[in-house]
Image (tube, rainbow, N blue to C red):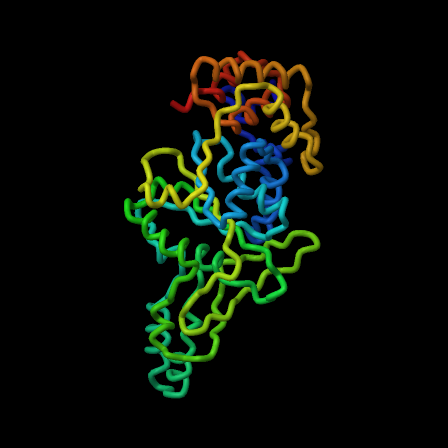
Length: 343
């Protein structure tokens, strides 16, 4: 147990991080500039979709409708979007987290009016520079995740839809679901700051894309041309919306979505497949699973679910990691600490 107790109460202070501790495979972060590419790919590779989830995704793709996923926290709702992106080689998942202050415009585009005003004031002594900055409004505009998802790709031969994850929509202001209806139904929106310019040339507007490229798939465009202030949709994006069920959505919104509820897994085989996908992937060095510990922890996990306790799948992974890496058994206090009900 000594290698488990990094923090102790009896031993004198000393640096216990002279060598890096081995982290769980799903908690190993990419250090290069905060690039999320590795994390997105891992989430896509390790997700184990059910047959019903596959059917729901295909229905949403063919009908050009958002996929509304409900289920308990940790059931894999958002991970399904990364699985679709990885398996269909769609590039980066455009992530739009929702809170009570989120507005439709936050997802559509961002206009930095303060920066434009600041630059105009700094250039008062140079009328030529001031005029140029006034005309180059695109310097202060960028598309949000929703706007980027709708924007067509520059290569007209590329018919791949973009993929958008709208995470925890049930946390939004009551009006946001209905505000999304027009965009989803019409497939476009306008940027008033550009619409007022009455310019006929296309302006190159930055997207929310950050640079995730899958092997063999060309890079996304960092900018897209916008004419007349309208952001049109050529290929309707794959939209995955998650909800923890904290409130009901308006019927008008719900009927325009493909709805699917992700149930808690109550059988050992699917849980074993999930565990093996995480522990036995190529980048999971030194974390091969002990079969006895695997069965022991899964049985304990299912026993708690059988008692109507709410447990997330990642709690199982955390318990397995500790039991597999150290001398713990399924009913030890540390494993019990990890497998606490969320209710």
